Length: 67
Length: 302
Image 1 (cartoon, each protein chain N blue to C red):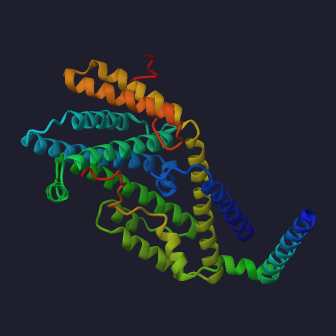
Image 2 (image 1 turned 90 degrees about the vertical axis):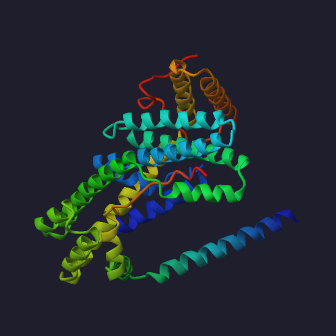
Image 3 (image 1 turned 180 degrees about the vertical axis):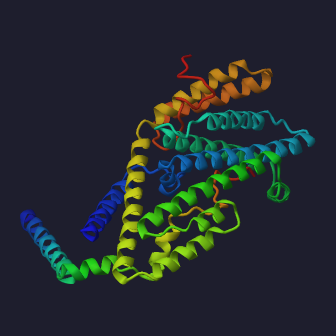
């Protein structure tokens, strides 16, 4: 009985894993499309990438308040 | 090729993030804070910022102690915390930003600063009601002192140097060079927002391919820096307890030369208790570095 339950659980896990792998692969079947989607420079993202390089002049670190 | 590399880097980052989430993560210091410390000026900035934060809290704490003395409250315990914050400030001041363990020292000492601040706040909370605390908060909120102002100026100068270097690094990627912009920023006539805007304009004039290349390089550098910071943080977590014990022992030895019996006695008790708690709890949070930062004391034996 226990073996059957374990077998069913393993079977379900196998099917779900296969579905997940299949969906990921078919989603980006074309490598170039995938890479293009990853790297196309959206103006906002580009702005963020530029911003990330600079520190604000009033930048501070927090250690908490005394009262 | 670079796009593939970015993809791989992103995957590595995600994997390390999952590992890091499972690990015992210290909350006091973010990767963003230590990322700039790979740069010498960045390390100077963080240590100065920590010194400024501690200095501000000491000044506020001293004012609060004066208020409590006025209502004849025994402030010895609070003064002992402030005295330890002073020692901590000296440790921060003597920390070497060029040292290979500068990040470790910063993270450890910042953790101490947070712990001591919290202890002070908790002690105050037991004494005063909410209304009085709110009044005191108002009084100390806008406190200005020369010491803090000088530190603010130093920090601002270092940040401008840091940003200027960053600007040249970006120029090397986008293939431009505008020294008047860099000079204007350095001497304070141009704001950092204008600098960012100018770079964005330069990038927008590029071809799509070049724009993508710039984007990829910026992103790749950021991801690489984040991975390095995370690895660094994980390494720092190891040996936390031992470092904290060494630091507390160093402070214990340091206060032996202090005058004022009552305060010294209170500090000794506090340090002993904290040392015992550290040893017993076996916590793996964040603590300090006793090597190189503790007012010139090294690995005390007692």
